[in-house]
Amino acid sequence: MSSWYFCSNEIVNSPSRSDGIEITAECRYRREGARFIMDVGNRMNLRYETVATGIVFYHRFYMMHSFKTINRLIGAAACLYLAGKAEETPKKCRDLVKAVRTILSERQMEAFGDDPKEEIISHERLLLQTIKFDLCVQHPYKYIVKFAKNLKDDRAQIEKVVQMAWNFVNDSLSTTLCLQWKPQVVAVSLLHLAAKLSKYNLSAAPDGPHYDHSKSWWQHFLPEINSDVLEDICLQMLDFYDKTDVGASNYNMISPPKITMKVPQSIPYRTL
Amino acid sequence: MENYVQVTEIANGAYGRVYKARDLNHNRLVALKKIAVINDEQGIPISTIREITSLKSLQSFGHQNIVRLYDIFANYTVDRRTMDLTLVFEHVEQDLQTYIRNCPSAGIDTRKIKDIIYQIVNAIDFLHANRIVHRDLKPQNVLISRQGIVKVADFGLAKVFCENVPITSVVVTLWYRCPEVLLQSTYATPVDMWSVGCIMAELYLREPLFCGQTDIDQLQKIFSMTGLPDESEWPVNIPFSRSTFCQYTRRPVQYSEMMPEICQDGVDLLQKLLKFNPKERLTAEESLQHPYFQDVLPSEKSDNHGDVNGRQ
Image (cartoon, rainbow over all chains, first blue to last red):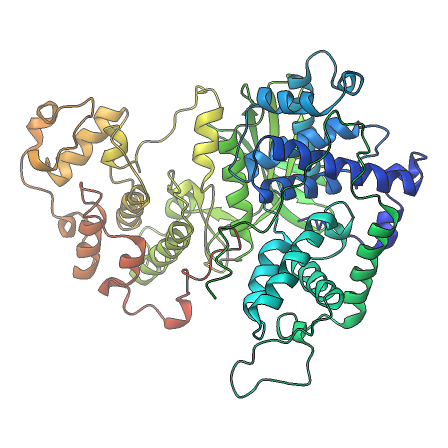
């Protein structure tokens, strides 16, 4: 079966590149598409997993198609539509079109043609064809929580680190990190970044007499990952913040973006 | 798709065509199963998405008694309402129907029968542990390799097909179908255990146990052998009344008379698999513990109840 992880060379030489689209433009399209999916998802009260799955579909889809051939707003809408089904939170296509209309300008809606519903459904087919039914997607969120449960005490500090790492995961969806690394690896890296920025030293909770104190905290969870990988991921994240005006609306939305993907109350974090 | 060269058509079933093909990339034989999925108002039906996703996630376990799914292709068709799916499965030389047909006239060795049944139950136990009901278990989709490894195929697809494909002229076999499905009552995992019972009997008999032509005929064939269940066991809210079948109240047939080679434990297992009441029917997990299988080598036993893959 196909792998959805790519090396940086493959990401740089994506189909959009052969179609004459500059890398900076592609990065912007990826970012905007991700933001668009979040906004529409939030408007439709979709769960954060559904939204994140839609965004991962979007990044994968544009590793196989160029932004020149497939309109990014339609592509994004189709990704969110399919993610709804894949995550067992299906929405009516009509309602998706309604939500899209509230966000896009009249002129932007033109991309969806006379029958936006049919346009999304036919792109859903193309999307399924492209991603070959690889619909079961994991995200770093659950690993953030899982790893944090196994970190040494000072709950208040860790909670702060977790919230920050959680926000990094939200923002990481605008980057190509999900095309490069497994969610576990992104999770430890962004916990690492959050801890560094909070000037807090993480350490794994010792388990048993064979606890190896010479290992870094994350190696207790992912022994095969070295610090170079972590640093690379942190740098990509910082680079993203450097180049992005995070609050800016890049596709001229009627209403300002409101990102509400916070750590959900349902995660029994405090009880640990 | 260009990497597959079709060799022959293996089957043209009620649900679609199956081809034997050569996978040029990996230089191996594969079975290509082609299905047309009808799109509804909302595009691809969520049921199709659900089934294919679970089919794919099951593959990550690499269970030895489950046929490997190598790849899936979705193709555009001229008609925008349908989507052609091609599922690429490993190719296994022979199915159990052919195996039974080709066995020597003296019959299949009873140790071999036990081994085959054990492997089928093992596969079904694995599917049920992962909340998948096969729904259409029959000798044609129980495959058997040259090494004698049994591989169950076509699980979970029955629903994708049934909900999406117009009924063709090809008749779906009723012979392995349990009473609750025939009576249009509610059903769940026990349906597969009934089919296991039918297949087990067929391995001893070398011919199908119940060969009905219609739903009613199939039920009549079943009751003529098992006897008519008590009024108290008859399901409620179904379109058939018990009195329709009242001529079948005579005593049940003795399996040991029909199958001289079957052992006492085998008869006991068969009776517990062919129970009319699905709640009384042995589950796959219980069946594996049945005394009939006690001389199956421990090395052939596997754990089917491990952690279910990631999805919450």
